[in-house]
Length: 142
Image 1 (tube, rainbow, N blue to C red):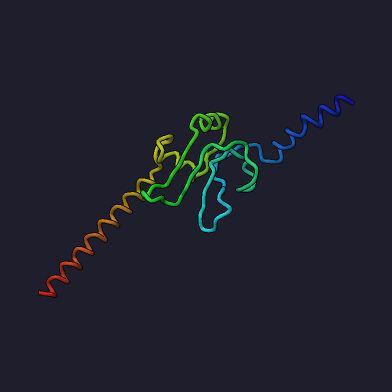
Image 2: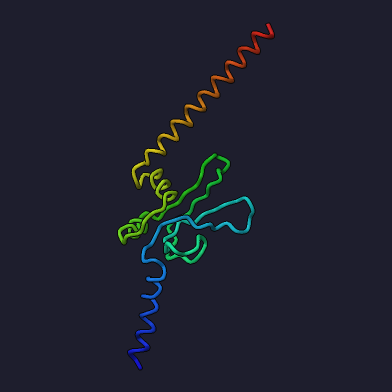
């Protein structure tokens, strides 16, 4: 009787691991439910088969994607726990890996650098176009 009882208690965790696919991911979980058009994310360690907003093993940080009054997107990490979960075999998702790269935890992804260069070139191009238009308008007035 005790053997069956122990098997039921300890067997549940084994069934849970098999059901959930057996590996852990570090990903974003939507946390801001009360306000429309105001996303707020938790950075969590969770099983890969769980729902995006479902149960998670541990919260590892937060991410606010909307810029504040100083045009900053706020991110917080518990780097010690992230190191622990990666050491246990957790896979960070692409958005989390990008955030960790921007924070200096991982090397920057080459596409992140390319996107920044393209954005910088686009802003320079728009600035020169507006300056040219202003010069043409001044010449037309004279």
